[in-house]
Amino acid sequence: MPEPLLAIEDLHIAVEDKPIVRGLSLLIHAGEVHAIMGPNGSGKSTLANALMGHPRYTITGGSVRYKGDEVIHWSPDERARAGMFLAFQYPTDVPGVSMINFLRRAASARRGSEIPVREFRQQLGTVLERLHIDEQFVRRYVNDGFSGGEKKRAEILQLGLLQPELAIMDETDSGLDIDALRIVAQGINATRRDSNATLLITHYQRMLNYVTPDFVHVLAAGRIVVSGDATLAHRLEAEGYDPILTEATEGAPA
Image (cartoon, rainbow, N blue to C red; front, side, top):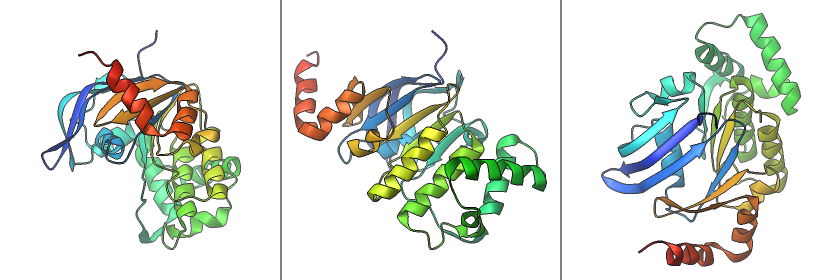
């Protein structure tokens, strides 16, 4: 078995000294899509932000190894340049900064050297075509005046251009109508490769109608309590969390 792309072992995370994630372990290999589902307050977004090094989320125990390297003490910038990517639940507006300039700076940082304008435009054009995004989209300021769907499409554009090995999608389906959800899901599928992996964090099964996960994990009270394949998500949609959480609790060792 090849080495996991991401190996999380007995991870504990606190926010302002309040424990949120309490002993979470997870292995993700290249080529896999993992979905994490769970009720509000279970620790899903806390996990996503801590994996990318957000300073508000303090890792108090455990290990996070990416490509075999411990990354807990890496800065967010180091993690991003190494190929980790976070799509935010609520992307930030950046008035005055055009998407095209933002994307060029991000791509240059990812590569570790300045990308010539002509080369960048060729790369961007290829990605825009593959994701079916009009070139006028990148002439706008970053997320400024964007609808919810446009903000999520901007995240997918970054994903396609930067080509991270590990994409962490934090409730990318939040607030999207059916058409926008389909477009975002198509973008995720278009960037899927045997050499990369996706950690898809979501409340609802509806995203998984378009992006088929290899594994589904249910997070509750800061721990993964049950894992399965895509059929687990369908069961959650039909039954809700309570029956599955009850079964997991009853089946846990005393």
